[in-house]
Image 1: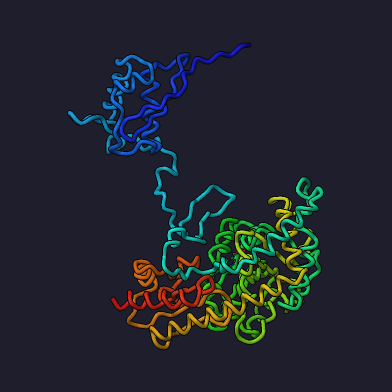
Image 2 (image 1 turned 90 degrees about the vertical axis):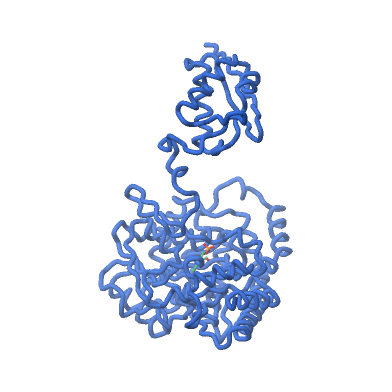
Length: 507
Ligand SMILES: Cc1ncc(COP(=O)(O)O)c(C=O)c1O
């Protein structure tokens, strides 16, 4: 069968700044006038044409589409009659300010485009609510100083070494880019991670227990999919990191918030039910920054053993400890295979790499590999290979030592600047990590207002909500906690930023 089309090419009809791309098909059962009507109506309803945009004249339209003037006039008359466009005598024809048919819009066009942080989209079972967290704000790039949290220093990325390892691997690529590899990750990288974790975090693991993932976020999904069933209990710290809580919630878990105090999670408030999953950040609690005491760690492990629970330990920024020696991770104290350890290269290298690792108890290791295979067949070979080389050459260790010192200096600069401009400050979480928390003194506005005034003065600071923290109540006085990331700013930028913030708050 031969198929012929007599569609005319789509001419661009211009008027003012409006460009209408209309395709007319002569074989279409629809009349030409209806085709013009339908296509202009769609452009208005899907937002291509906006309220009060000027329309081409019927003369322009007819000559450029190659239709009679009468066809264009009839199409316009119907658009006017139904309220899509209107004419202003002696001025021209314009898109109407009141759209008559919003039901025609798709759901996401009808809802406001600004994504409200933490607002849930309800989806049909088996999925739970889907919420979103914000990890960057491109608007803030223009600020004089942005104390955004969780972002490493771009200037310290080991670019030379990284490009050397990438190029080197590409020279001997073999079939690595053209075949599937082990979904659990490149064995060389898993070995290098195991070798790093033993002395650094007290986590002794066989590389077979390790699954390379696309950062902690991928790890939360992997572990969640292994352990969460709809309606099961997911213990989370209150407040906690949104990224993890929202994954657990999306899998149908019921969140069970347990308050955090100076010693970390208040283990006396854990549920007395079996089979829960507990998501915790013991080394540097997110967002408050406190470290879980040894006593609490041991109690948490005992609870997990007693109630057949698993603990997801998120050790996201533990490479940076500024006071004393690094604390052993919870996983390092686990004698009953209750802890699943998650680590990431997002903080010590950069989140653009999307590389992290999950250390599973031996009995879950094979399940972890299979789940990763079902999720995405594993991470990119090239970055894994470069990371393995970067670690085994000793460069990773040197890089960590260098940025740890740099970040410590920046932390000191921030503490000094806060003291100089605001006097004695109540600070949490400054012993480790990449951000600290300042409890705003009485008489100051709350954190959301300080953030607003800071932004107006060209300085970015974060209330808990902006910093991707989920609050369940206000027992920690959460609305007075201000998060300040310090590692991506130079000491000079830190000083300038805090001086400006002080000025803005005085004003
Ligand atoms: C507490 C916490 N865990 C995990 C992550 C996510 O890291 P990744 O980039 O590895 O997914 C973040 C990111 O900021 C975080 O703050």
